Length: 165
Length: 401
Image 1: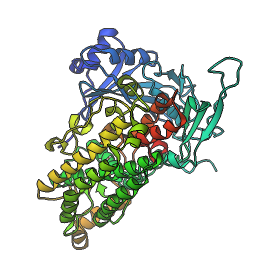
Image 2: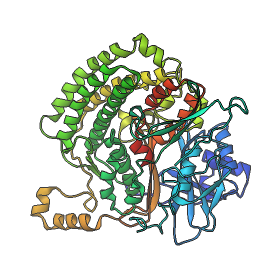
Image 3: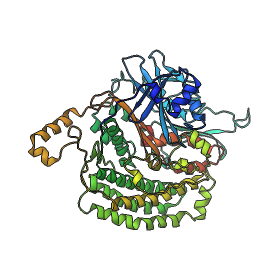
Image 4: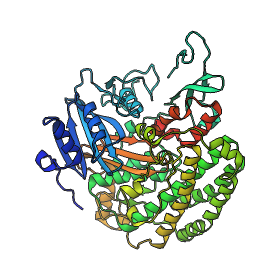
């Protein structure tokens, strides 16, 4: 089965429950959108992410009530450098959606989701530890994988695979 | 290193609580989990898990390997269910490539995955029962697990780090007589589950140690990101095999066990019933195993047969190119989640169009499940912490990656 080309036109995708819900809240909330390999990706501004997630969680027809995962990708050396990625799952409707926030390399920070899902705690600590992205409003933003006194953030692309010698 | 500063949680001014370190060498923490406990006498006031002792940077290592070289790394994340991790990774890469997998390979993957689930649940049952004090169950469980490991060895050459699945199919045909051996096992295994249940399910000591212990509501479980039996034990009916099927799971009939109580016993019942459902799926897979190839027809991605590689020029070229240069994967990103024995195992892979993944992220079920521990234990007795840790079935290799 050959790959179908990705759809990036908002008009064609506005019937997806998550997209419809977000557009109903604010017309310009979606910065860009992509439907590729049966997966929906929505890029929102970093100031909107917490409210967008809270809205999607409370939706009446298709509540994205479960936070599957938070992770990050480093696009060094291009800017905006970091993409923080949120995977949401709707347990009643069996739907998934991926939200993204793009951050510049100068003091990357985004609002924490711990007030929406308590389970965001460990995931955000992991992203902070391995990428150095800060989450404002996180109750305990400390390293989780690496030792407390570790230098640098290992999953950044400018961090060598063998570590600093 | 995490730390807990003693806080006067109970009565201000009175220093009644103390900090107790449990682990990382504690035998009932299933590896190297350190749990910081703030206790008032025998009661846990606060609890904080401290992890990272097994962090090996697998996600970073993946970025420096070809796509096919990542498969052996995925075994090492969760050493109790290697095939599940293999499957999740290859499914994600196949989704990126848009590859179609022949039915026989898909059914074999299902068969092996269910055997892996049985293997993993047997280790969980044995160690969990031993933590609580029932020694015999451990020996019984490992007797059956040994048989499964021997079958894994027969099929892949390794007992634990199988690396048996490949992008585009599976590595080799199972050896002659292997299916009969599995059928044999599927025949007598349900009796063995009865044996374990005879030892535990009605046992008054077991019931006292598990019923009503470490309770968690469905809302808390969802909010904390719990998946798998930890979530289903609290009454949330979701199983990715049934609800978002992958690798032909939609062609199998099985029930999803759900318990409502949300305590250690509920999670125990979920997993024990899953043992029976899994062996049912194994039997269905054996009965309906389709004929045909076990590898996709994709010459630039799947290694050619040994015979062809030695006799045909073209196959030799493909073989050489795959080994030395890997294969390029179209740019894009996918998140593939499957139901591992512990919950939702997900692989998020970003490709930039080259032969090496740009980013591989593993969403590990235990990592999220571990967050429920504090909710389960705070306000309860110290002895229940051990039961609670056992009931969420953690594997530290998967948590720390």
